Structure formats: structure tokens, C-alpha cells
Image (cartoon, rainbow, N blue to C red):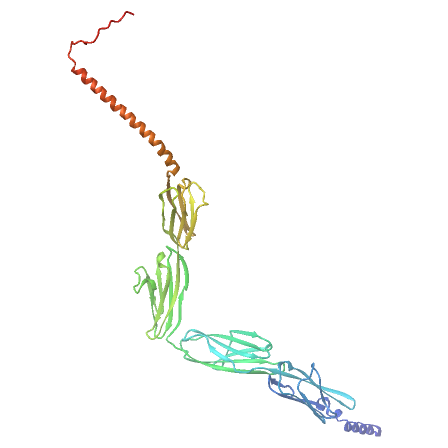
Length: 462
């Protein structure tokens, strides 16, 4: 019994001499604050207190930032301007009765220089329409865990789209919210909250709000289709609808048709709905169609673009016929079509084309030959085509030959003697005719039975 009592006294004496054994390690060496969180650019003090010995801040980075001030059982690390690179673990240690003790604290840093910016991207919002809001924050740190929360009149909404934009070391973040209002909405308040998740427990957040006042006049204005491609001869149907208070009236027009509605438009109307129908499309029906929705107080328009496709029309070819050799020839082929037609040229007898000069423009093509030759005579064909059809036209070209200068000299040289011979022969013909006429005249004047007074001659026998 005495031995146990003596042992208890010795143990108690040892505890009194060494307070570490009495308080325990956690109570012996303390760092405050326990979880420091500092905004970038601000100052911080980390204080280390020990119940025994002289505590010191030990280096845990390449160089411990700030200034250390120590006194008996107390050491203070002060950083006048915290940077994002100072986010780290910091260690304070002490040796007491030959035993080494240490405590570690993590310094969290963040950047959140200003409240979020909330703006409305939809202009002149009306009740019943879908509005788009954007919330953005700049120069945030840390970037690895950022959340954006949306509230409508203090009720949490779902974030539709969140886009972080990274920089180094800070980042920007943007979030979009698409919200469809209804005809009862007049005054709405949207609040955006951006939260930074920190390495240590806890977070930092800021928020901002935007008030929206909606016009309940018109909403849900739609036109279908907004763009369509149809072939000529096919029907066309365009629908337009809209809501409002009072119920809106819907009218149709086409800018290139003037203020009058064409008689072949079939228009049906219902409550907040109207349809324009054309039975068979013609090329001139292409263009923009406008539906105007109005309730007397407010009006708005929607547009539908119609593209009418058709094969070649109004095709013609000009420039054929007769032309002299060595003259220039120009053949022109034209045609309208949608899509725009392609125009090509060919010769019926597959003659050479190396001297052809072809120029093309929208719906027009010209074939030109600077100096015609006999080999250029023939039938020329132009083909006007697109994906919906083709048209072929032909033109006959006749080339008239001309006499060359050297040929003219030869003909002129031969014509002179030929003319001389013709004149001499005609002169002989006239002389002969005159002699014959004179001879006949004398014969008729001689009396019958008269003899010649000349000497008589006697013929000898054979």
C-alpha cells in the first residue's frame, strides 16, 4: 500500500514539472486562427502559442512569406499582402524538455472583387415569352469549384447553362438562364448568386438582383415555316399565331405585292391563329411574306422567306442568219430559271471550237467568233438547263464567200480581150447583114429576059 502511494506521488510530481503531460499535445501548441481564409491583397496574422519553450514558424515553401515576430512562448507570422501563391500549409514547431512538437495550418486565399453582374439579353420582354438573363463574375479565385445559383422571387431555380472562362491565376464565369413567363407575369425579380468553393471548409459568395417589368399585351408570336424551298406548281402553306390581351388580329402582306391581297391567296383565321395558303406556286410567288399581329395597343411582325424553284423559262437565241466571210459573229442565248441555269454551246456537225469566245453572266451566254470562215457555217445549239429541266435552241449560220483582190485582177484582165472579141464579131455581123440586104435589093430591081453586055465566054467540054 505504501509502495502504491509513493508511486502515485512520483507520477503527480512529474506531471506538475511537465505541463505537456498534463494538458496534452493539442492544448500545448496552438495556432490561431484555426482555418484562416484571406482575400487576395489583404493582410493576415498567424499566431502560434506554446505552453513550454519558444515556438517558431518553420519554412514550408521556398521562402516563408511575411515577417515573423517571436517572444517567450509566442510567435506571429504577418503577411501584409496575400497573393494567390501564398495558399499553402504553414507549420509552427517547438522543442520542450527535449521533445519536438509541431502544428500545421492551411491558409486559404480567394478573389471576389465585386458583386455579380446581372443583365437581360431579351429586349422589350413581354408576358408569355421566353426571356434570357446572364450573370457574370470576373477575376475569381479559386477557379476549380464555382457554382452559380438563380432565384426568382427568392425561390431557387435551375441553372440552364454555366460557362467558366479560365485565365491564370484568376478566371471569369458566365451563366445563362432561359425562363418562360406566362400571361399573368407582370413584375419579376431575378437574383444571381456566385459561390466560391474553398480548399478549407466553407465558401464565399456574392449576389445581385434584377427587376423585370413585363408588358402583357402580346406573347408567343410565331410563324411557320420561317424559310422554305418549294417547286413551282406545288402548294404553299404558312401559319402565324400569337397570344395577347385582348386577342390579337393577324393580317398578311408581301412587300412586292403592294397593299392589296392577291385574289389567289386563301387566308383562314381563328382565335389568335391564321393560315395563308396558295394552291399552285408560280415563280413570282417567291419572296418574303409578313404576318402582322396586333391587338390595338401593341403590334409586331414575323417574316417567312419562300424560295420557288422552276426549270428554264423565256429561253431565246439571237444572232443567227447570214454573215460575210471574215466578219465577226455573235450569238446570244438567254433563259430564266431557279436555281440559276447553266448555258452551254455545241455545233451540230461537231466543228472546231478553238476560235470560240464564250462569256457567261446571270441567265445569259454569248458565243463570239472574231473572223468567220467557210468552216464556221452550220447549225449552232445552246442548252439551258438546271436540276428541274432543260431547253435546247438552234440557230443557222450561213457564211457568204467574198472575192479576193488577186482574183479580181485576174477576172478584170480576162474581161478586156473578151470584150474586144465580142465587139469585133458584132461588127462583122453588122457588115455581113448590110451586104446581104444590098444584094437582095439589086436582084429585085433587074428586068426579066435581059442579058449581060459583057463578053461571051464558051466553056469547053469536059
